Image (cartoon, rainbow, N blue to C red; front, side, top):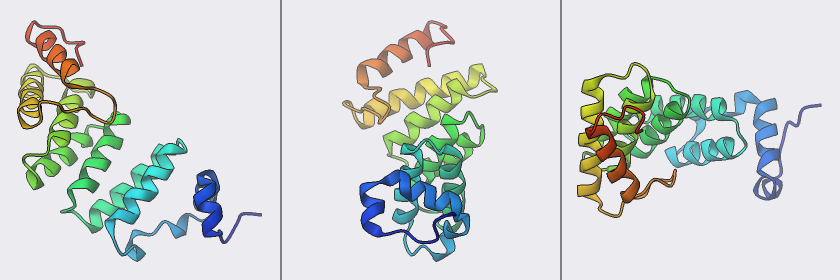
Length: 168
């Protein structure tokens, strides 16, 4: 039988139990009852760590609909969409940049989406170069959660400028 309740201590000690609980009780993943966007972000992280990317994506899409001006939510959703190869990542990340123009992470992720998600265009490549250069101006020591650091970004910029379309 599917679990209908979950002891908080179990959830803290066994995140997989939390994921199983929500898989069995999908109605409990209801952002309308969440009082703060950080709850959705934390739960999405649990889903991602448990390799439940589609559950995280659905939760974040609903959370962004409820809290459209939350930059961290927009960025988190954009990162998940990027990982799924979804062109909607670009729209989401552009919204995050609109909300926080000096956020280097959103700019980095948008640049990556322009290089990794079809359709890839020469104009998109040029935009990605500009975004990556801006990231390094905003934060010369920028390192993304994916491990890409300043030296990596400079190398990608150089390769893109010399015409290497596989640089991203």
